[in-house]
Image (tube, rainbow, N blue to C red; front, top):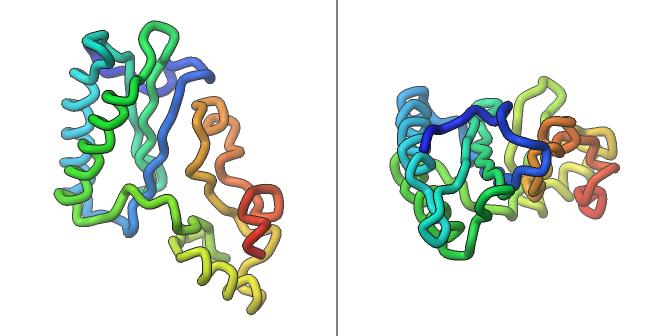
Length: 163
């Protein structure tokens, strides 16, 4: 199977977004890209090839997409993806599988990763608020990524509960 750019996928394509705990070195990103490409070229679900692609966004986010109109990702294929991501973590020296942190842009436009309790503390101190740009790594459709709504104001997302 040939790897395709995300631009070739429909809005309904299923996505997973993984945030890197810190910005990896460029050499690590190059290895990450190469390793993901090799994995996705042979990724299957119940022996059916999956039409998949990926992108590396903002030097922090790995986005993996699969077009489920032909064959959908199964539990076993998702487990295989998780195993692959764990190998990438080891190679790049970053954490990618951790849904607990809050990802946001600070006033200088830098992407920050903090624990939820720390985000609450920052909100109490007025350092972040309802207009702070946050990233929703729980999105599951490519269309959400394309419309830009995966990066939104904290007051308009699940992050509002932390303010």
